[in-house]
Image 1 (cartoon, rainbow, N blue to C red):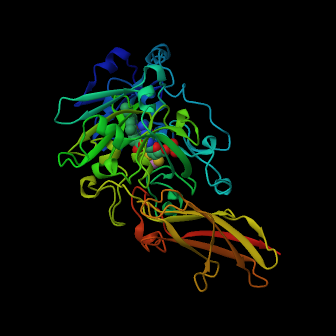
Image 2 (cartoon, protein in one colour):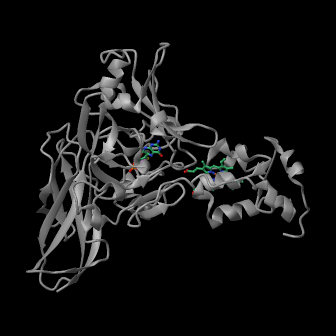
Image 3 (tube, rainbow, N blue to C red):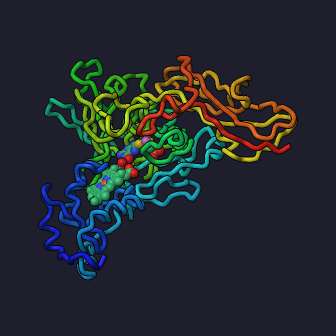
Length: 469
Ligand code: HEM
Ligand code: MTE
Ligand code: MO
């Protein structure tokens, strides 16, 4: 806007305290003083005070949309010279430039940070999801870790003791392998958001995968660090990743102490995924695998473990990944009032056919395939499928299910059903719901489980299909 005054970078930098906050974006100068307290991303916005927002927006790509740019434009007070606009970001490099290469079959819900899932029809082709096709959920750039210099720090709070283990030392513990499904709390969010908009990545039904994970048992490592599994001193085990936000705060999460030390909890510090070194996107070189627990607590690029009385104080433990009432909105939400999600509720999804696909009727039947899984080590005991709105239900066949009993059953179940089709049917809607070994089942609709963050999105899966005779 040529009618606004010109400012220098020097002048902008003098407006960096909370009573006057200016920032730049490209050639624009903006007074965001009033906006700071309303910023959905919190007071991190002050990192840009007196300077450019651009490096931070490379990191948080949520800003790359027209609404945010319009919002910013409404706060414009002036311009930089073309020369100075260049200087403002001259030594800025893309923090994501060292991210690994990804398989083209992974469909990104966001590129920076990288978040992507497979087409659901491919997901059910294999009980073990190939590493390259496993969904990716990153909050930050993938850290580059030199395994020869890698150190895992283990601290027991209240003691002065810290134990440090190298990659080679971790590999010397007895190797333990589990087959475990990892699922994002936001899996199937795109269906919930249709009822009413939620905030979060628009995941389909494939923010889930199943793999074998091998590594040292966390309980063995904690025992070596001198932590008694019967201790009443500790309530939580916190994990910190090596991926950090611009303030240097790492990704973090915690799990209950009992889960970490329980012989049957199967928590491992994994160095292998499906028999290969863990790929960079999935936590190379060491990742916490916490079977039966929401993806967010399975911390990748593990750098530090803190055994503590308290939960992790990270944003993702305290102010995210929690469930709320359908009537709680962003004005009334109080994140201290809900517990952090740990075990996930029972879920299933129809992966074949995909929504809207034309399905050929063969011998008056169609084939429906999907997955089902439940958190907390519960096993799937039944999957029900209907094509007539629940007037008649068909029990699915399990094509692949591990034999491990509950509550130590960590892997998903792949199922299929041959459904008889009434003569002449043209358009149907296929519904599926699963039942776990606690006889918990999925809710019928999203309306009454809606929550502002779009997590725990496990209502009946409904897939419309057009039939071809
Ligand atoms: C989220 C606006 C500057 C960090 C958001 C959102 C908006 C917004 C509208 C919500 C987006 C969504 O969830 O759909 C702005 C504007 C800014 C600004 C207008 C400039 C004046 C910054 C800066 C930082 C930052 C400088 C970091 C240093 C974040 C973070 C989130 C966020 C961490 C949350 C991302 C998430 O939920 O995953 N911002 N922002 N913002 N912003 Fe900003
Ligand atoms: N660990 C670190 N260090 N950083 C992250 O961003 N994302 C978490 C979890 N662990 C994350 C992390 C979330 S929300 C999920 S759903 C899973 O990792 C995704 O694991 P995946 O990318 O291997 O599928
Ligand atoms: Mo997640």
